[in-house]
Image (tube, rainbow, N blue to C red; front, side):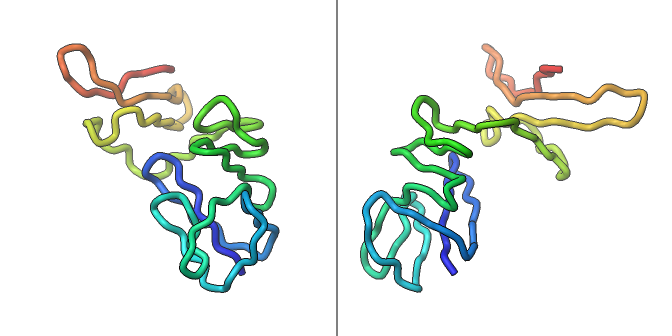
Length: 130
């Protein structure tokens, strides 16, 4: 089994699969592969940068791509992006500024899309996009 880590901002998602994992340089892979905060995967005592995981998630410097090698943005997605917010919406504050939140509402009430943002006077609040 191979273990790879995808770091987006400060959040980390762990991928465990028995599939193709490629790195920027051609080297052997030990069984003790441990993801690190730096975005590298420790193989034994060395650290190496991954080029892709399953040829679906790609890494290019500090950019991440889903479905394609990213070139212009920190995150590039080929296809749609779905926000599945089944957890409770957090309070809007400096720790979550920039967070987007989608709420699917009951029949007869429109859904909503919001972003946590700060105004010129320094007040944090959820701003309705839709």
